[in-house]
Image (cartoon, rainbow over all chains, first blue to last red; front, side, top):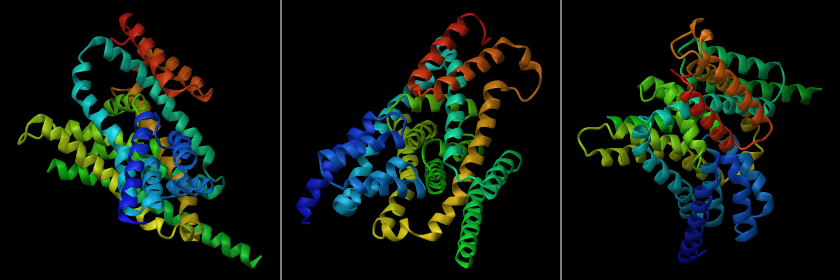
Length: 189
Length: 200
């Protein structure tokens, strides 16, 4: 692809992902159908079958799903320039909106009515987080090791000051070792 | 320096959370508490703001904390500090994704079928569940036992109203009612209860 062509695609990626960033509430997973509609159906930038791969990769690499998918699709469509354009596009609306809100939120909190509203909202948000917990539990592989890792992470996080990053790395290593051991067992059998 | 702190903290958050969205909450909660950037109560308030504004949670919270903390940097005007702070935090949370995905995009079939990746994921999914469970506990404490664990809150109307509201929201959540609607309903109920004097 020539540079000029690449820049045209990059600009289109920026516009598409700006729209996606500006109009999806609820982050990553809520964006997938929109991303699919815009990049596969409308602009034919990637293939239908790529979408599943993109979700799988966005989930198994660190970082927000939205950023991971934007970077990945941008790269597939127009190389590094494309990935920068798509990522910048998806971040920009959030950045501008929240920056503006941050100037007002503190002053807003001085009104009794806003404080009351947030007292109610906090109870509602707790339920939303609880729901996220349940849906992540459902996606989680079941089995003794899995439960053990989850329980150990919970206990270590609540009762010790061990850095969460070490807990995450430890879980990854344990997962890897047990997975490789189970593969070896299967091969022998 | 605050700008470097913001960048590094959010870089860590971006580099070590798998699954996006609420999976980031435990790390953000610990990181924010360690620096004294926000109370748990403020964090929960912001989760509601983030649900009600477009965009990914990670970017929203990075921008917000960056703006709040950068604004307190005295060497520059408030607005400039806020802008720089939110820029550093947001750049920090995005950068690990950008680097990692660019590397993987070149060899993604190998990555997708890799035993190492599959193996790590079998450990990373349950760890996220455990860590979110711990975050639920911390956040639950800030909602129900803001002054520390004791029996005193059990005698207040605020405790029982929050409990009912939380249970009702959970039911609505599992009935697939949109989070924004749940937030609006709890806001209206919260305002009503406030004027009845429940929140004190």
